[in-house]
Image (cartoon, rainbow, N blue to C red; front, side):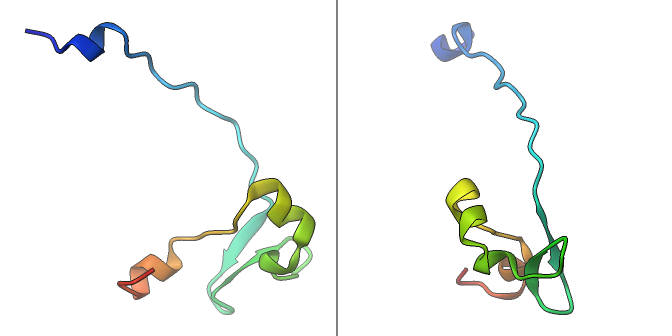
Length: 63
């Protein structure tokens, strides 16, 4: 028996996203291509909403 929801479920479209920052393990922060801290770029924060990385969740249990 197939669950009812599977009759209507469709795969989500894959979004092509370009992330303008990378994680710097030395600073333990996300940085922009020019070396500035990504969290200090107000225009970037307005556009993407956050600059999360997985680093905190690997080192702190309460992130």
